[in-house]
Image (cartoon, rainbow, N blue to C red; front, top):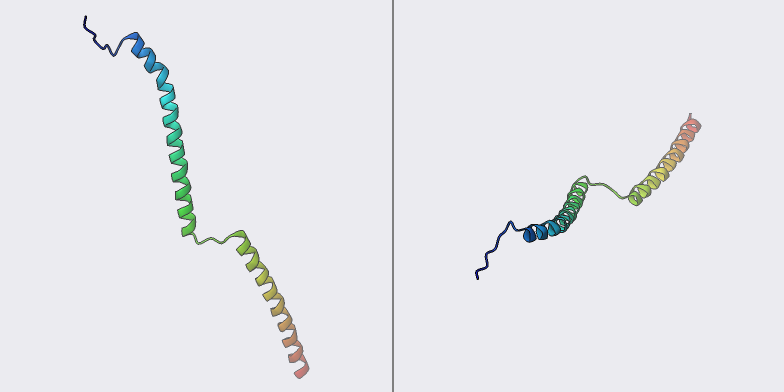
Length: 87
């Protein structure tokens, strides 16, 4: 009695049919995970090249600018008052 493997037998094809969706699904999940990881890394690398500041840094600089403008306005008023008094 000899045993010959038939790749096209019903049992082999049924087994492949059952296993293929699992393999495809796990393969696609792996690809999705790799894609998400690579996309995130690419976005982060490009954002670093843009030399952006955080919201906190922006807010601090905005407050510094506001105080500077207020001081400048005060000094301009004092200068105008001094010029008027000397005339």
